[in-house]
Length: 257
Image (tube, rainbow, N blue to C red):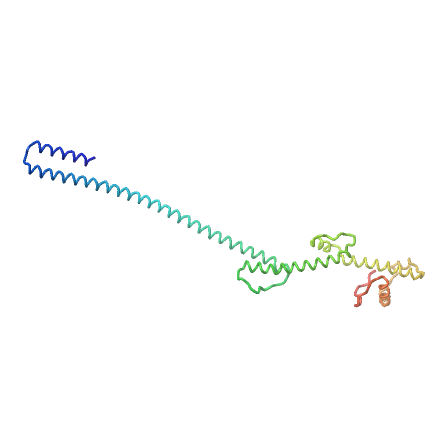
């Protein structure tokens, strides 16, 4: 607007000069100066607008740079937080792995009382501990399978009136009773043996005073044992009669009353 006003003022001066009828050369020179001044004003206005545009662009670039700088600072802060979180996670992971290794080792050696050496360790504490546990686990599984087969074979003799449990744990608990199952079975066998002996004696049609035989208070242990020893040569024939095949090794059982 200032440039337009200046040009309007110059135009008015040119008109007044013409109307005064002064020297034409001086007027012409003045008009040329006025035109040159007007041109310079136009150029100055254009330069001013260009400068304002450049300043506006520079300000926009500065604002954009500030926004980018703030974004970079935010990214740096977030990166630092992420690194801290990653360090915490690594620490927690290390602690977790150590606890897992400790638990794996606790389930190995104390269970089997046997050490194993890995042929091809991977030098990873966690994986190597797992491999050792697998060795011990395989040994335990084989032991349980053999124990289960053995207890199943013995079950009918110890528990003739019971149904065999379907799981090994229940089967093992039956044999791990507070009662001495071996002694109980020996006593049952002794009872059967006595009944069979009585039946054999009765079948021989010999007259015996069973009341006197049953009076164990009159039995002398030393004499009773010597009589058992003397009777052993004939036990094979009696056992064969009962359908029992005796073992080739001598009996190690102790005589019981």
